[in-house]
Image 1: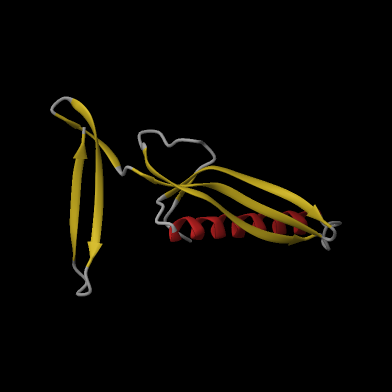
Image 2: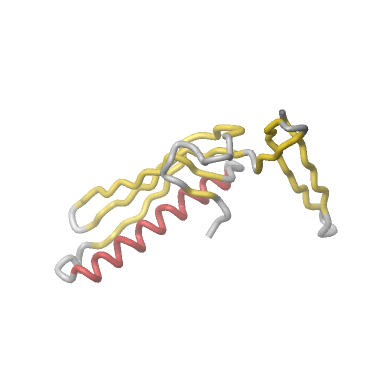
Length: 127
């Protein structure tokens, strides 16, 4: 799985959106052949839902996002199958909040790896 925060809410508490990157989605199919066996059908829907969310998160990660907000999951019956579609907005969130000189400030952290396996860590404080 990816390291992306996924939420159905339009915001993340104490993590302001730094940049909106666009709408992302992921799709999956669930077979209804086992529809008469509710537990098997339910398990298939859960697997398909997880796969659709995973595909959506991968698409967000490719855009450079660290979160997907406002996620919805649609279930569409199509013959002997269900199509599951996970959709949300890929964003970059500020990584943290801190108090600087008695004022709330937003801190952005970035790690830049180097080919040698070491890297630079940069932290900026935005009032």
